[in-house]
Length: 356
Ligand code: NAD
Ligand code: IPM
Ligand code: MN
Image (cartoon, rainbow, N blue to C red):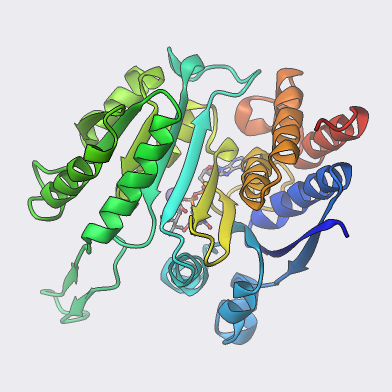
């Protein structure tokens, strides 16, 4: 019997509805070529579902997702619905319910993309973002609503377990790459959680004598990323810092439209979720111009996670070859539509013999 993987597909909102079908077409092709099947179950959950039902997903939605081998997500977010309803109604509960505590975000310069800044041609880094705690916490509230003296409080939550498992994952990754780990901190201004972050990261490094740890304040780190992008290997960061650095690094590589992410439960006790770094991009939604590379690359990460590295490599090579040929969407200075780029990738996949 052929290898089978059950994939939950949530295209979501905005350009998610455009780039997910594009990526599924290529994923299905590459799966056929490598002799395995992706059993896709599409869930129409997102803002349209919210408008109809008052919730982002049905009450048994998370239980249904739990049965799949992986989740393939597009994007969530609608300009007319508060993000707190949409994101905290779908994306964040998935990350937390399935303990997807690592958000893995590789960024590298792809062929054929003109460099945005000097040195960006050497960009090849991975952001390991802590994905279930930190600054993204529901602890807090608002008081005196509507009064002139209204106030809001939000408590960041950093746990030894949360920091150390992110640091350990990042250090292991660095050990298999160039051996350099940069920890994003702000322990000069945020005086409780960030010194704790620094301590736990440093403790974890005791087990990784071959990895050099650089602790860099987040403000200086942002500048250094622009000035010397090739200097970074693996960056470990809290939920918020990792979020911001991901868009910055994606832009340095050419466009946030190319950046992928894996929300991982590394122990595979629960399904992991693969999605691009970008959002629903309401400014270009429906125009057919969205760059599908972030979604395609997220698809390749999913194949890798499922244990199909040859297929993952072939998919990555196919979109890279299209870029190298000069096929580019608008965000990269080209004129190709989402469909034309996807046709290019599909044609390339069909043209060459499958690589083992
Ligand atoms: P965004 O990432 O959607 O867009 C930022 C800019 O990048 C826009 O100009 C957009 O056109 C461009 N862009 C993004 N992806 C692109 C692509 N594939 N091709 C070409 N251009 C692309 O960020 P935003 O505008 O701040 O957020 C829009 C909505 O998406 C909000 O509701 C936000 O909360 C949500 N969001 C969701 C996710 C997610 O689902 N994981 C991630 C980020 C933002
Ligand atoms: C991302 C997004 C989300 C995040 C938002 C939409 C909550 O920006 O996945 O990068 O900050 O995690
Ligand atoms: Mn983000």
